[in-house]
Image 1: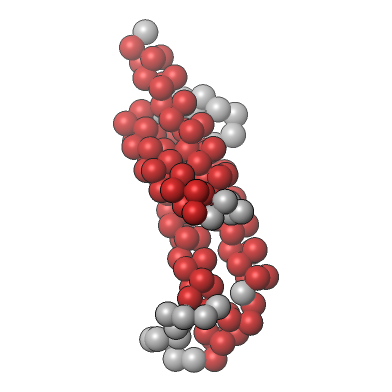
Image 2: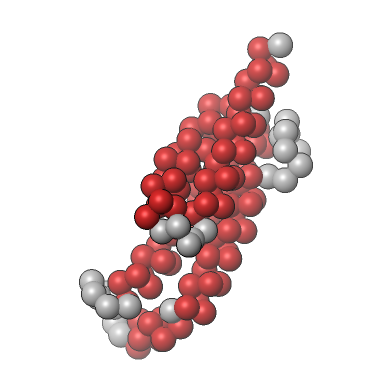
Length: 129
């Protein structure tokens, strides 16, 4: 374990959010997922109706997993720049999304990103001292 400041990895929190997001999506969009599975892979999702949001709901899961992994690696390695950049990206992506979809998990991503920015600031102060 590296110089992480928080007791819980912000990166791991994002990965848990991603898995939870996929679980909620599987419940909400189970009919649409069955339809996707019954069609050829290319063109399985449509641009309209309930299938479009079902598709976009699941696009976020791998992205959050990847960002969470990058954030966790930055925390473990004490990489202040990567921690700041990854958390800043997360905040820039999650705040507008939370504004447009207030009943969503984007608020959790925003909070985790703020924690990451706070940790990056603390880590940079520790390196300067």
